[in-house]
Amino acid sequence: MLFEYPPHNLHPNAVRYGYRLCSWHWQQPGNAEIMKQESARPLMLKATAAISKGKYAGAEDLLKQAVQIAPHYAEALLLLAEDYEHQGKTQDAMDVYHSLVYSQGWGSSINSSPNTSFRYMLLLVKANRLKEAGDMLARANRSFTITTGHPIIADIAPHSQDPIALEAAAHLGLGISTQSHMSSNTEEQLHHIKKALALKPDSKEAQAAYQKALQMPA
View 1 (spheres, rainbow, N blue to C red):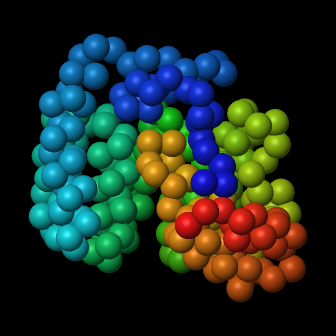
View 2 (tube, one colour; view 1 turned 135 degrees about the vertical axis):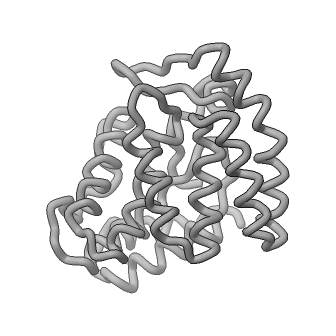
């Protein structure tokens, strides 16, 4: 992977159970929430298998059951948003991404991950909701700055009203970041970087990311 959020040395249980970012450190959720997520986890794993076979409607049913058991199960919610995208249910996907990004009083590494913001951002751009898309870019930059000291994307302004520039930023963000609980998908990341370059060929950050991606093992 090119970048990981949160840092790779975060305790494994923080990724598995979901820790929320608060006052510059990660806090463990209550035992009750952990138990709910453990109960829902088999459903999420079945949904993952269903998605791998292209059975998106079946996966949707399983994931809805999972989040009914554990409404704050960010990993299941993220998978549900992706499943909606596979089915072309864009508004449903956007609603789930919104609930993840703007969670109130709960959260995890997934909620505050720039990768989640960029997934939502790409759909917002395609829906021509450019101000909200810019807000997602600003949010991703803030989150990344917390752990690295610099924004993840600097050469495209969040307040830009240029849909091409914002779409390029979303693809670039997805190309250079990944979820900490997921295995790196170099092919998918390279696809997004190429999309960013096609949209904004003068982007030095996209050019640098492309060169770095070519050096990554397949």
